[in-house]
Image (cartoon, rainbow, N blue to C red; front, side, top):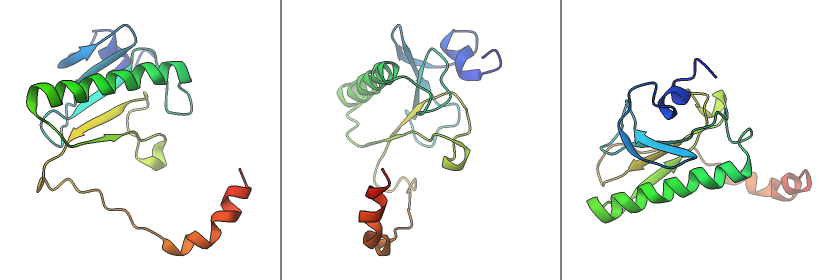
Length: 132
């Protein structure tokens, strides 16, 4: 994908602030951070989203996620993180190259994700499971 910014970052063709990398994945600081050390982890090969990435590549990327959180825990004492992936425009994906966000969290950082829950949908669970 010649116009994909994450492909360019993974190839070293666009500026980034590298945290770590291996043969398959690249971790770098998010250019629009919500907290200090907000990090993106991408596969070096282009996959649009979770539906597109192979299981083997997903395992490789998630192993770098684990390396990043372990590094932050060991070196910085970070003990609270959110690991987020959004796949598809209706899931708020805005860069269409598969990636994870690692967001270190602290009490009072005002980065609360609040979901509207629907307890009434519990009665539909049997029907929902029957469809899969």
